[in-house]
Length: 522
Image (cartoon, rainbow, N blue to C red; front, side, top):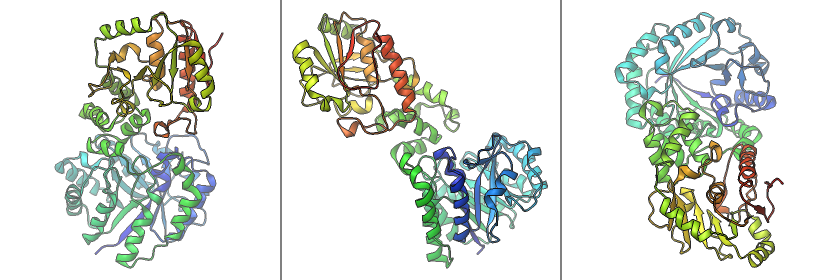
């Protein structure tokens, strides 16, 4: 049996979680603690076309890494990563001098193979250990994979790696790739494996690779606490413990736990990584995990609609993420035209010359109940609840454009107004065409409160009183905690909502009666 090596890539692959903003002390501290674990390889970060920032694990060149790895451990090889999708000009990479990293891992997609081969040769000529990383290995046919291995054999790199970019490679397919690689790579080249955990295959595949007892050396990538985008990566501390228990290695687990406790816990609290349904769905639909992140943040889709949306993404675009395309597919899914003129005319008659009280699900409808009740008595409004059913109020209508929220409201006996993107339900009283009332700003395109205000803005409404539209904040501010959202860019969302409220209030008398982040300008 060949040797089994472990490579820590917490700072590099884990950096997708926090934009590599670990901080200088954490980068140095992680480097020092990894050296105490006894693992064989440590990847300190990306080498990219960027300005130097000592607090990020992304470096413009090899020289800027040197201060972080002073007093290098003789038992540990230090590496950085270059992405051939945006390669550092080769002239920016100095010749190997032993003071900084020992090796460079070069990642490339299948369509960059020719460029990557030439680039890798130049990296090797500069004296660095060369690691060849086949991004999206499962996108290769068997013939393509073998041909690519044979071509890179000409360089005799230090290692070649199977890379499960989307976390979709199951054991049977993984074994096929391993056998293809093992039978075609030169025997002195290390076979590597880089996993992602969307389908929880990382540990099992890594275990399988070790238990094959290949004659060649193998190297398995892992991150402390599995840190990584989406569902995360193979847990270094778990796999090191497995190796200790089954192969008499002597990896030190405590320094790994210290890294989690000292440097990663805050990032984990701010942005969870680990198994969850959106990443499972992205993997089963063979989609880039960023689609899952983008759609999950919208907090509008049920699991069924989430799955339907991912299935609609053209196969040629599933593996290359674009925010613009993601938004286009989302709008396309939501915007199936619905002829709503009959329902609109009914609601115009029902709302004519009346006051409206809009009840949004913010905490203030409970905290400031007295003023809400006083408004109801004094103004006799039609009460419309947005994406909620506050049981302590006598609500006349529920309005929802949120597929996920409406799934919990559709059995209510209250009259329900939905928009046409809310599919797969027959339990409603009125349906409005989604596109007619969607907002123009993509981050709030389906904000239910604004959509309702837009709907009634052209009606003959006396006054619109608003309660519970408290505004997004980092703390839970919903009267029902099951409605809580986790949004990034909170300030931007609040700003966009304010802009639209300002415009809508020009056509009707809008009055906030409970505390809010928003205002109506005179």
